[in-house]
Image 1 (cartoon, rainbow, N blue to C red):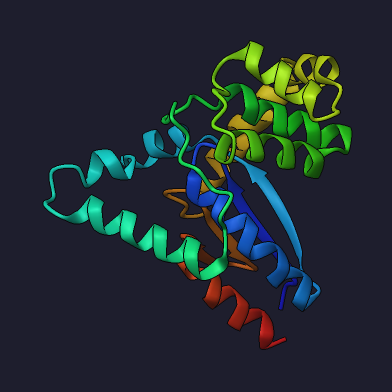
Image 2 (cartoon, rainbow, N blue to C red):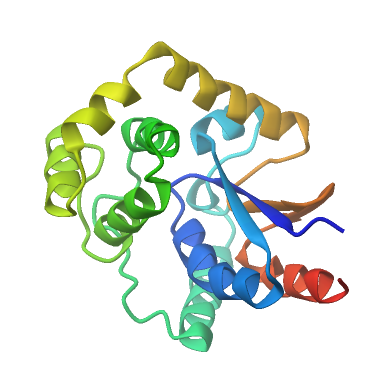
Length: 201
């Protein structure tokens, strides 16, 4: 069985932040590698006819309240006390997602993700603003000029678009989604299933 977890990822999803925090130690426990695949959640929604939970569930009495209850339970269960809902949500993540592709090419993806996720889902930064993005990267000790210049290259733009299309072709309809081999798992609530599958060896 594959010991690689493919993580279909967009900073736009608070659940992606929560999932990464929980999945990382599970991967370490099993000697597995997490491979982050940057995709645009908005592009996934467009290609599949899906929509954000606050849109899809908005008309359903009690549904969004329950979704928030489940999120609070997850946060409490895993001690994710630094999480804060971003006051600027929803944020257009096109620039920071291209930045992630650029960071992968530059070999600094983990550091980039740490800086952006902290700013986005702990410190409430408006990362839809290119000025704020540059300031955030610099404050995190990263070369913001190189990252942002690389992120505007056509190969980076093309890779992000291709990742998104390929994920949908594999059956992805939202974020966070995960693959272990050919097995698809959707949502942070499925991480326990990934843990159990990896434990089978």
